[in-house]
Image (cartoon, rainbow, N blue to C red; front, top):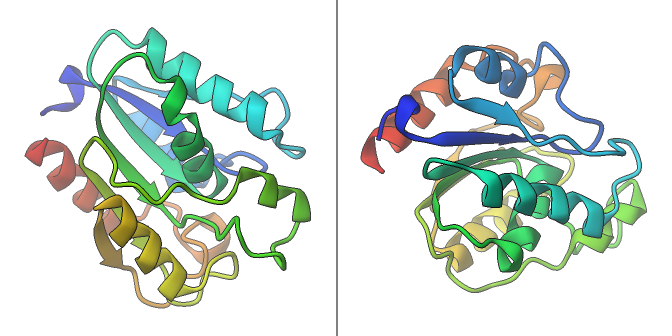
Length: 182
């Protein structure tokens, strides 16, 4: 699949992805990419966030490829029962452990727990060994349950601009390969 053949939905996490974040950079470079907007980025409500993701998927005109980061992964996964269109694939980066009672802010737990069934579409989960929002083993277990290709990003923090992943060329190349294989 090529970029022009897909509706690429950028699904940011808690507080959105700023201009230096790799998601924002990819959105500006990928001609068919659009951001799933949330009414309240800093006080996420599961029902609202999942409805926004489902609406974007259901309004798509081409096959959908989801590119989600952090809480955006949880929103996309929890929105799946509302999808009325098939998803061609999903690229999930730094999923948070929304079942962890120590997660901060605590209201992020309302997005959990994750379903454990295999996904109905190809997916990749990329996780860091030192992500403050999810233990590496938890991310690996989630990816295994979903039947996702799991990629170890090493010690990469939360894979966001704050941890040095603005341009993230390795991620871009991995996404290009994933898209080509769809």
